[in-house]
Length: 593
Image (cartoon, rainbow, N blue to C red; front, top):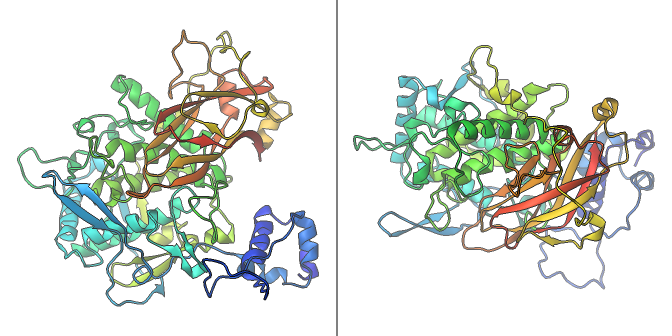
């Protein structure tokens, strides 16, 4: 590497990681004595095994390899979706119809003979304004119903058909595509549980919206969003319900939880069971959950977006990736809350392979996408999109509104002005969740005894979550109550190596420094609640274990529980659903700038 790189001793960790990956994946090493690999592929480079070295030493050792100017393109290794028609593995999943017949759902999109080309933003001045589903005008609602009906009326093998659009989510979430374009044909592409979550779904809705508008010849057509972050918008929007007069509603889906319709307030921290609380209490808890996902647990880019996911990573075995705060929080809770109660796989919304068959899915994800915008607007100087080339240059392939196959990139998804859509917000809107920080606990509150609670060092990991786990975790040695120190860095609880069965709905809750409540545990409405980890099923008919990780902001939790001067934080993990086989690999508290 040229001496220009040596002038940058503070080269970022992400750049260092990219250099390391480049050596491992881009430099081919052959040996006549090497045994053939069982899954050899002609495009697969052989791995060069290197000892662990300090980043700076590696940079010095690479002198002469490449110039700094060429570094980003030479060493970036972003996930690259292949041709989605010729490189798709069709998955077959069975679901029960109301008449007990079995229908088959395959995940691959139709092939109409198109080749993939890079997407170019169309030249247009129209700005599509997405609208809150509970406040839609008659024209907005009727146009939306007409568009969905027109999509349903298309032949199934048309790339714009209702079925073809639903297949997109199935294929990208359930191993339909592999990293063949990155020379890893045995590694699935998975757009959940990592930093791909937000940009993939943004592009998905972008084309879905434009296709619907074209079908009814409405250039200003915009999607509704399910505004579950506002009390009035928390029930399922009425336009998605079955018509009481027996008129067929194209927005209705029979695979929904029948207990959660007709003005029932959504539970944004749903754990698979309905809580016996008043609507007022549920609304308050929901607002606290949105606050937690966007502010407390979404305080930095990595915590909000999720961990890095690059070519060569296996989705089922890369425990370094962490799930983002909104994805593991509000997003997953709504999926599970809507999904059918009695279906074996929680179709439609309660399982990723079938989610796209419920029109409510797109309305829900429009609000998830809006969370990305609101998060950036909260703190423009600090809430920033990732800048790692591996994120910027990650790409997906979709059919556009003209039935062309186009490749789109994360870097082009960040600017809504370029995408030509936005969200209708009420004038001088005061978002109620911004003031929904849990009420601070009294200093006189008695903290639960920790005399018999082991420290992380005393426990044997991995730990099984088939029952409640309580452990004391050492906090970083700083002036813990200093406001100046808090400005410099926040405390983050990292739970790494979360291994779970991807065929189940999984949910556990995380509490910190609980107080005694006469045997009654704290709830997600209380200041002790740090957040939850939740996953809905990723595959049907293929049992697999997945490794993930989660991050929880502790600074406010410690303030709100009046325990910020304590040397240890007592962390309680409470299993709620599907945790019989869940294990935890590590718990640690770190300071994050």
